[in-house]
Amino acid sequence: MEIIIQENAERAARMTAKLIADAVREKPTLVLGLATGGTMEKVYEFLAEFHAKDSLDFSRVVTFNLDEYVGLPAEDPRSYRYYMEEHLFRHVNIKPENTHLPDGTASDLKSECQRYEELIKSSGGVDLQLLGVGRSGHIGFNEPLSALRSRTRATTLSPVTIEQNQIYFGESAMPSRAITVGVGTILESRRCLMLALGKQKAAVVAKALEGPISSMISASALQLHPHCTVIVDEEAAADLKEKEYYRLIFKTEPDWEAYR
Ligand code: F6R
Image (cartoon, rainbow, N blue to C red):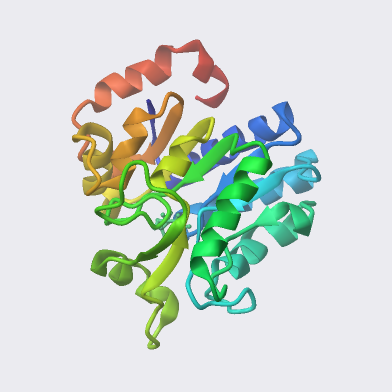
């Protein structure tokens, strides 16, 4: 695992976007796993900027989002499909048919999850999986107790997640369930790239990166991944014990020269 501490959220998001852009340039047919949420907004802004100013080409990129709320159709402004259209897809030259999210309105959720897993597999698997982390420790919507080998399925959102995301639903009740790609599915991606920002994430970041691997903190499963890069800002890094060592690695490893 590589842990990179950037001085602020802007720089952390920019580096995340740069790593994605480099991966797209290296493999124009990249299969890219995507996340939503407040953390990713700036990342998508940078990607849209790289497309507009540096001709970053998404025409052959294929995307798979991690999750979608059960019961929300694509036209609902609170759905993740809507979020992706707003924040990324309509700003770049990605082909609509190459963008995938689970269908939260499917009448048979089990078959929908199976279909999604099979589609990922038949697309060659995810090359680069972008991840945020929830205050519950989730990646995707893999809430506490999610098996480390779990697959795409419908889950019940934890009270911590409901509290975290209720702001997007105002006065109305938010969905209590979501379809999420599993922890096991995420671990099969060729590379994982997690971004965490802000002091509200400091405790969970420390648990995930330096704590024991546990199904109670799904993000800790990333410790098992052979190629996982985690980018955090100073605030999200606040509770990490080995900060100085991570900084030293970033300063000295030649692989990071272009990103310092
Ligand atoms: C959403 C997802 C979640 C979020 C996490 C952080 O697609 O995968 O795991 O990444 O809940 O959300 P924010 O960025 O809003 O704090």
